[in-house]
Image 1 (cartoon, rainbow, N blue to C red):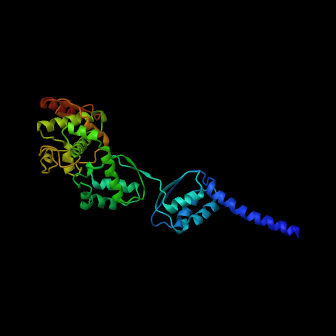
Image 2: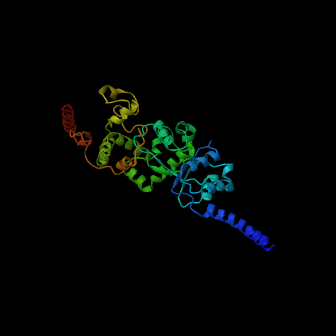
Amino acid sequence: MKKWILAAVVVLLAVPGFFAARYFIDRKLPGFSSSLDIYVYPDDSPSSVLEDILGQGVVLREGSLRRAFRSAGAMDGVQPGHYTVAPSSSTMYLARMLRHGWQTPVSLTLSGSIRSRGVLARKIGAQMMVDSVDVASTLNSPDFLEAHGTDTTLLFTKIIPDTYSIKWSEGPDAIIERLFKEADSWWTPERLAKAASQGLSREEVSTLASIVDGESHYAPELPRIAGVYLNRLRSGMLLQADPTVAYCFGYSLKRVLLRHLEYDSPYNTYKYKGLPPGPISCPPVECLEAVLRAERHDYYYFCASPSLDGTHLFASSYDQHLRNARAFQNAISK
């Protein structure tokens, strides 16, 4: 009789110990052999997400993860988004992350040439959960843009290419609003004062910066090129910027020829004085800064250098400019 009582006591003590051990394993012990990136789409079922995680081969205890999914309610539903799990995380923490949508932001990088709203939409769609078509719809929405104090002409004055930390599942409106907010933050009172000292508004800085961006990608020369265009603006000269003509033709031209200069558009700075109505691309930070800290000099002209290394020759007189241009053409001919 005593043996049966002893056995019963052992069982009674073992059962709580068994569940206590499970509780400790699921909630306290590291559950993964390495970090884990998880992307959950809106139509993913909890079971498919669970199997995808197990299929990555980094879960230390399969049973623990399955229990955690059930206990945390993740089998009833998981939230779309991107999640990063550290090796030290428990299986219960992962299950709760998915259940409650504790997302890990991703890096949205806007770089390279962004010459149209369509290009911008595709860059966002390629990195975020949102479809590029939906992003394009937001970028082309008069109501959305008007509500944020802009329109399609000045849109690129409200966006600065950079890398942003943002939730992968954000919708198109939220993403664009975030970009607008970041650009507003970039335009500090100090930068606005620098713009004013150049006789430019924030929008005009962005417009001129987009032209500078179209002229050169050699960073040391950008402030000098900006200075050339500021000299022309202040003297009442035509800007005569080839990138604005290229913009008129949707950047489809291999070379800007004399006949292209006659194209009638307010963006054609060979026909109309002053800056075009808005940016011809989304100008990067280095070009915005180049306009704000433009060199003060007496150059009014520049052309590609005969060294063919991406640099330019600058001139104060048109005669000198013609000599520089002939030297470049000779180098091309050779």
